[in-house]
Length: 337
Ligand SMILES: NC(=O)C1=CN([C@@H]2O[C@H](COP(=O)(O)OP(=O)(O)OC[C@H]3O[C@@H](n4cnc5c(N)ncnc54)[C@H](O)[C@@H]3O)[C@@H](O)[C@H]2O)C=CC1
Ligand SMILES: O=C([O-])CC(=O)C(=O)O
Image (cartoon, rainbow, N blue to C red; front, side, top):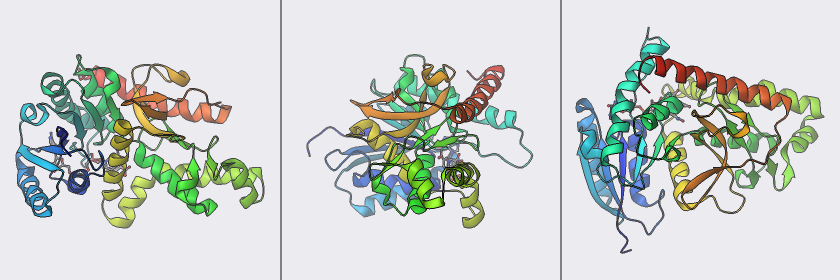
């Protein structure tokens, strides 16, 4: 284990997801058992004590891969030399806040962070935005980092992808590990489209397996449209209702999965979902950060472009992309991009 440590910046490191992320990163779950890490924890002043407390616990965990922890409220320090940036800290929607207010408040976070990444991060910087509204926050950061290739800015839809796997596995009574080819399209919001048209379980097509279990194609289609899609798309709200607060461990786990696959590759048959810069694939508007079916090879996400999109899927994808375009117009009119 003589490799140079990878510098990982985590924003909002003193928050809930930050707390769940830090220990898994330091254990090697994200970058593998041979890669030492330096952690840069960025917080706002009122979050620094929580980040300091987490750092004490990191020390107490004696992780062999953890080479250094830096805690700061200065983005220039946090992003200096960063190879990976996990942008978790964001401004939550408060009571009475309009969408424009939320985008404005987050623009005040992700604009400066994009500029600090542009100025201070390492040349191979890769960014995943978790803080909501994740896709548009990623767009703001990317737009404020003109020297960083756009394909280095991504947003997390892996949690939605994993939620879809969990629901399908339960419906089919199939191990999660046998499921392939699920896709989340569009925005990390209730308009997202979880798509199983090309999915397989144990090598068999999921639509046919659902029809066999549910007594026909119409019953399977109703289950997909009336139960599966809304349940996955609104799972965040369900967790808040049942748990009393938003998803934390599953969000951290999905973030680990996203970065792990981006850096180390998805391998054979490992198609997944990630929100990445659109170059117009599948008719998605260029220059929004949309979720696509992807594989990762040599440290880059690639859209899997060979899938048929039927009329139902087309409508769902277009609706979610229309929301992304609206959000882009809103942040453009606020001067944030
Ligand atoms: N994309 C996804 O799938 C999911 C996204 N989320 C989002 O992740 C975000 C974080 O969630 P939690 O950790 O539960 O929230 P939290 O409120 O526990 O933690 C957020 C932390 O960010 C810090 N912070 C705020 N502004 C900052 C800034 N400018 N720089 C650095 N740190 C800053 C806060 O001080 C706080 O410690 C939220 O926006 C949430 O909506 C949550 C679950 C899933
Ligand atoms: O709504 C939230 O803050 C949490 C979220 O994004 C999710 O659970 O998908």
